[in-house]
Image 1 (cartoon, rainbow, N blue to C red):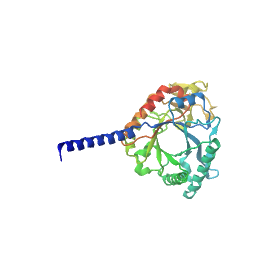
Image 2 (cartoon, one colour; image 1 turned 90 degrees about the vertical axis):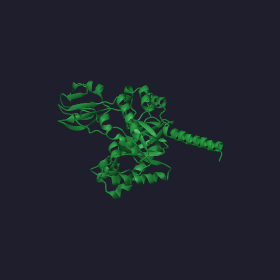
Image 3 (cartoon, rainbow, N blue to C red; image 1 turned 120 degrees about the vertical axis):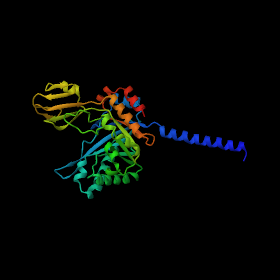
Image 4 (cartoon, rainbow, N blue to C red; image 1 turned 45 degrees about the horizontal axis):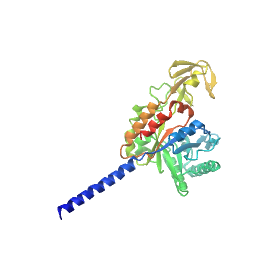
Length: 351
């Protein structure tokens, strides 16, 4: 074999490797689809919301259709808070219905009844979508399953996955960070994709030192396990704030979309610190009863915190895990006053 032939083969081999490598890098670095979650009970597309979707080239909208809770009176699961539509959904954005199922449903419901629940959920999703002319390719299930409920929840997701497969659709499931780290114990839901929730992993406390929505210290204990998770993943980052209502150290609940401006404008609260307030007497506020001495702790998410979450998600995924979709939770005009288009673009462009 001549030297020229050897060199020619070597050059061709090098070129082939370069082409394969370039193709691999191109595939792995293709930017993810951009998305928002919409978590209200009423869809009303304001000019600001539509402008945000268009300016940020948002391709998907994960829309909560309804919740499933456990009704103690009837001893059965029950759908609540179904979404209502005041305006048409945007034609250029893919709608992905989301159903939130309270974990108690799978704690209380007999395993034999899981199939019936799956059928009823599928029927209700189809009815809502059909009434609005929504054609969808993916249904997302949101449930923080536990060791005790994993078997029933996985059975539920498997039934729906098989039902939807015949219609050419897929099922995805939300995945919490602790379920990423302890995947061997918690199990992997039998779905096509997982949506990694990079928020709400801290314990909600009456007087927490760190935000329960997101803090980098807690997140960093879990994110290194993202790359080894054996399910194709998307990721959703926090773009919201909430207020923790407590009484004598016991958390009474959360006030969503209620921040410092709303609390400060109400005469019944006294400001204790920049994000803490106390009820000066007993009253009703935003449909919730407050006793004198009840406390409010405002936990606000900032663009800097969301950028931190994005950085941790990306570093945790490494070279082995590619997020197909990057979403922000959630699409709300109050949040959009804090996060302008430049901030949103900076977060999304980091992927």
